[in-house]
Amino acid sequence: MEEPIEAIALWELGYSKETAGAMTDAIKYYRKALRMNPDVEKLYRKKMHDEWRLNEEMKKLKLNSNVNIVDGSSETDPDGRKEETEGLSQTEDLVELPCWILDMLPDDILSMIIDMVVLSSADSWMNLSLTCKKFNLLCFHDSSPYRTFAEYIYKKQVYNENEMRLNGISDIQALAETVWGQNYRKMLKERPYIKFHGIYISVVNYLRHGSIPEGSSSLLNPIHMITYYRYFRFYPDGRCIRLLTTDEPNIVVPGFSLERCSERKDSDICSWSLSLDDGLDQLTIKRNRRKDGLEFNEILKISNRGHKKFSKLKWIASSATRQDGTTMQFSLSKEKPFHFSKAKSYRDC
Image (cartoon, rainbow, N blue to C red; front, top):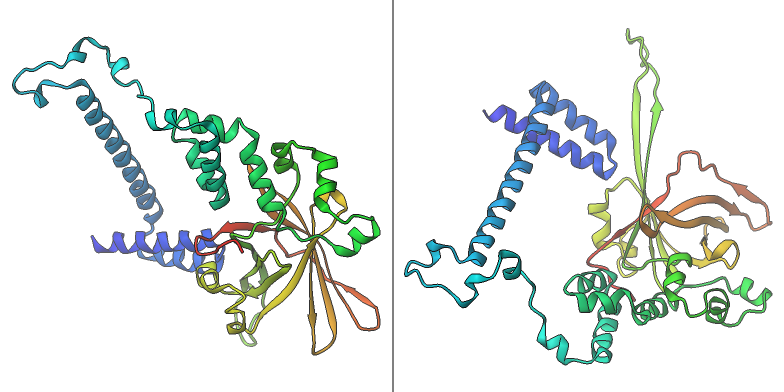
């Protein structure tokens, strides 16, 4: 009995590694599990299905218990007493009562509360809108929260000063108003921005073919799965941390900050800015290497990741410029886009 349990545990560990992008480790655990039990995948699927069925049964049980409480069944009324609402239908019993406190407060006060919640986090803004119809109306059918969030997030963006000077732009907000006016909801949908309450991660996997050892009788070349990660964390002051490593996110993310950057020799402090061209969605990251005087430039494009707005960075170009002005272009054939991942321990600066 212990053997299937251990095999399933190894399979789950392999799945977690695959989810994190560590394909080499995932394959290793999958193979160990299969050697221990060839039917481990079926056992794993059965376990997941049983857990799903159990959750569904628990939901039904909880729902039935709530209905019994609302109906006032005979088990909870041993004396046979009837409440005044006995004649009401079940639908009427489940009607949501109004929140008298919210009805007592004017919309101006509630809007101030919403603005404070918006400044705390976008998730809190969404959760607040789900509490009642009143907050839903004020959260998403009023322009004030959108204006608050837009002013909060866009004032932290850093734009290329040379481009602003060449185009005669001294205030980026004035440029935004000429394009979007006071339509802050549309602005948040169309105007890209960098996020600061998390980290951008790129997981790169590729195969590398080895060579047959001398004297080996094997006819097959060994194949190695190479996995490495790229990390970016941005700050509103125009700095960002760049890291290229084989360490997984659960190791890197907790201590990935400017204060602890010196603890990692392979990390770099760079500068970032957004371009005024191409819809304000072009991101440039620059860093200098002192030992040889090279200036590295990495250009990426801010895009959407499914329904998640501006949570993806696509590679455009990567180059290095020598002190004599010559430029070297780097290949991006193996590189993958960055995906934004929120970190609870990170705070907006």
